[in-house]
Length: 188
Figure (tube, rainbow, N blue to C red):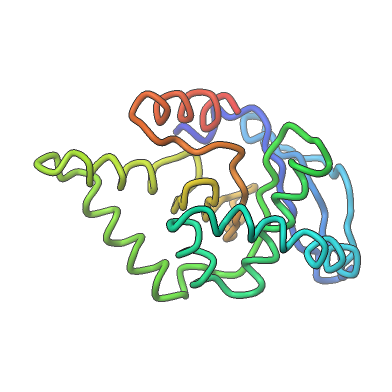
């Protein structure tokens, strides 16, 4: 399983009892994690209010990312902004996988994911198959990419959860897709 080869990943997980969220560093190979930082909800609201216009400007430059934004709930949008903040404004190398609501409950995402999973093995239409592979394959249990935006389902110690994150780059060709898979999905 590819997931076990990944060295470390960062997650922002909800702690309902404390009304906080914790950034954890998870090492799947050794099945352990450590808490790196805590955010309270008020601090995260301030971050999202301040950075939403910056993220929206980047998203509006792409039709694909705009489609995501127009279909996502405010909660998913805010969680994406937090992931963007972690890398772009805190200067951290790792991508922050932010626990979010069930994005497969949104008809648009559910239908698109099903359609792309069917299309990824249609080799009679190589461009369509490549687009579908790029959008649905990766290190997570379930993947749906919109260029830099990545919706996924992950598991930390057998607990599955929905997440969204801002990828620093997105694979736009076959060679970039292979490089992204090796360096971000396997070794990242």
